[in-house]
Image (cartoon, rainbow, N blue to C red; front, side, top):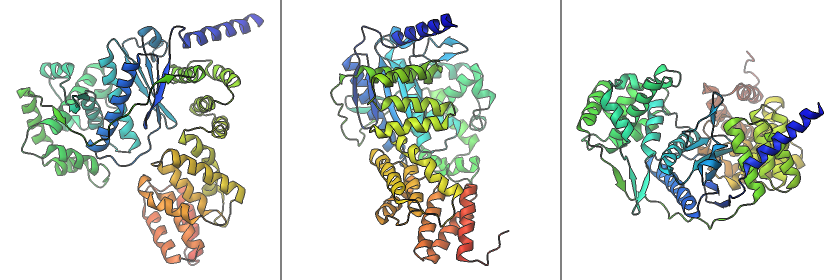
Length: 501
């Protein structure tokens, strides 16, 4: 038993040493949307960060994206293949050696890991592809699979050349593939989803990616009498209209049905003339702050967190606890501990770590919403409409949510939680309610917000406005059961004659 403990300790020490190669010099800086930790050259590090910020701006304007909260995105750039190898993801127990870069998502934080230097172009394509998926997910775009993957492949070739954005550079492997094999019909392509064999089997998966890229390339870059680029914007907007089926949505957006689009795409591919999009983009210049030597404890924390997300490495929690003991004021360490506990379904443990991070002054807005979410949602699920938050607790909740919104002004969930909290306070804060109303468009499904506003209107005696809000909730097909239950209770308080059945 004693030998086993010594062996475990030795293995943990070996893992720890592997995390920080002795000769590495780690640098760090941050921009509005990314935090960089890099052992690559300062020039390569600045370039990848500048490109990511430019890509973010291009996506915002080019895709006409609605507001959305993106998780804090940490870019870890490795200067050599040797350093990167310990952090590459694994499949069936083996390291995926061919990976040059990858992305891990999460509501709390996201990671972009990349090897800069040799073969950096392939890594950049991977990162740009995956980052587009993050943008689509955080904006709730509800893209069909062909469009999600097609756009990601199209934007993966993003470049800035002489101050101009260049998109649509032909992807050689896709072009060759499409010339050598029989393609899906457009009708079949648009029906493929994540459970389809065409998306999960090697050869047909490659065809799916290639043809999805080709269709998006045609829609955005072909010289055509049809208004295809605007048609793509219309098609994306129509995804929110659940009353339309896809054939109707497709034809309404592009002015072509599947069969006609099939002919147009085949003609485009036969010609083999892949036009590029090149143009000015209305974005502010990207200023990358000077790279500074990184705090070694912050680097260790980030690498442990990344390795766990990529491989679920045993011992990660223990290493982070030891790191926290040596660095008791670094909020990123309890943030990472909370993230691991949360992903292991240890909810209370995760919350306890995130509360510690908040007390340390964390700059991650997710930490502050999670710190108060359980308390606020308890009002919705377990309290009666006449319950009032104790003043001290109400002030604590307000402070946490205001901090989250200060860090992330597009955080729709934080606005909704603030409205719910105000609905159950003894003295609702009018300024907070007005703040929520001004930002209601940032909440994807605002049923809980509508309920909170209905409760506030009822409390001030405005039963007419309360009834209008309740009617909207009760007409919705996807409101959560707890929302419907409290809406019914409130309806009966306004009009006791309403049946309980």
